[in-house]
Image 1 (cartoon, helix red, strand yellow):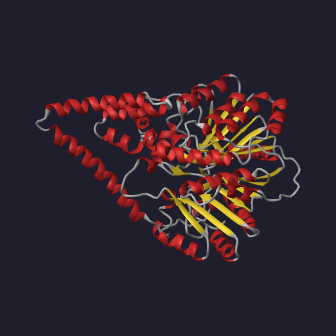
Image 2 (cartoon, rainbow, N blue to C red; image 1 turned 180 degrees about the horizontal axis):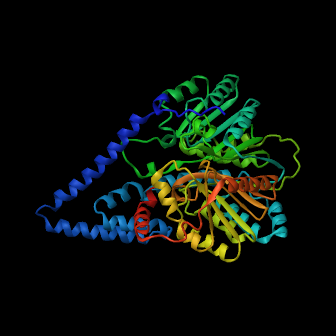
Image 3 (spheres, rainbow, N blue to C red; image 1 turned 30 degrees about the vertical axis):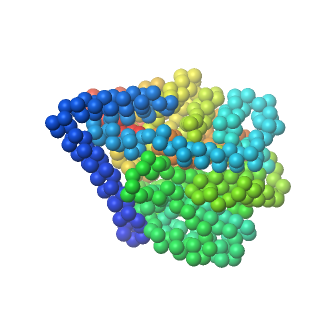
Length: 517
């Protein structure tokens, strides 16, 4: 086998200088705030008292917020235990209440798009007659997220990101009307080159091509020339939430979605970004395990609307009729392949939709429920659902990486093993390398594939997307992929069933910074 090269970051154009400026700006903001507080305290005892009162008041306000306790407790400890640093960090990164304008705009777009395709009640009734518990989980996504469930959709699963990317490129070559792509990270290098070639060729041929990338996710891989080159060929490019030296709360929220839509007929969703390491061109962390799915048919309409919502949230350019224009396309007559429900989550919503969907999978599981996640940093509620399922006799398993991409986050991930292993959850580490796939499968009937990790950032701070499958052909393929991963993974359940005191202390300290990971 040809040896994979280890790529140097200097080989790829990036905006790293801009990132350094932003980080320096953040440090200056914090130092300046701390200095100002210390200055005011000098010879002014009343300022010291006022500062102490403000710290307590801020901690009480955080405590009173309508949010998950596992998320707000570390903030309270940071605010009270590390003044003024904790207070500054919270003011910069933790104040969701400062986003009322953004939330209103996003919800307005979502509600308008949801009206285009209201819930398919007949399909929901079919599932209710088959399994009321699964129907309840599906109704939750429909009612709280505004998404539709579909039949007449062909599904295909890819157990390797490189295989999925190859299929994607072939599908892109057949585009006739439009191409929509939304990715967290895009690297202007070898892996993206065939994508770029097709996108530019199609744009020159008159196909409407739109690309969204997250600024932080791509900042190490591209610079401003990347967008200019694509735009010169007619590709429309938008970067989500560009970082700025002026620090603001919204900077902490990132677009982690991975979506490709072609002509409203074909869609791709998965865990892989458009960068070299996802396609085994470079392998800095061993074998990079990722997965994806292709859907063809009616369910692609939902992916179109999810993309249109983000495109217009960045900059409003489409009218209400455009959503229908891009989804009103004739699809080939496709035999039923179960039920398919594409959905998305957002920090602009009050409802923790993605986390609740995972928890509902556990609540409805009868025989087994397996998860695969690159990071495991979960709330008490999620931990309780995992444990409750195991105590009911459900075979609950979690696969995490064997080789980490971020050592600090990996230590945090392992800090959750003991409490889960002690209550019957089986933990596996993927020994060939880094397992970046985000999947769940249960009872041979339900599965989820998408971008949603079992961590705070995915569940509370990121824009995410996934597809819920019920009785589709891919469910069996996803289960088979899990079984193959179990064979090459090491089970570490017994190893972490007991912890020594020093390990417990280190892990408790790591939990303090979990909201920022």
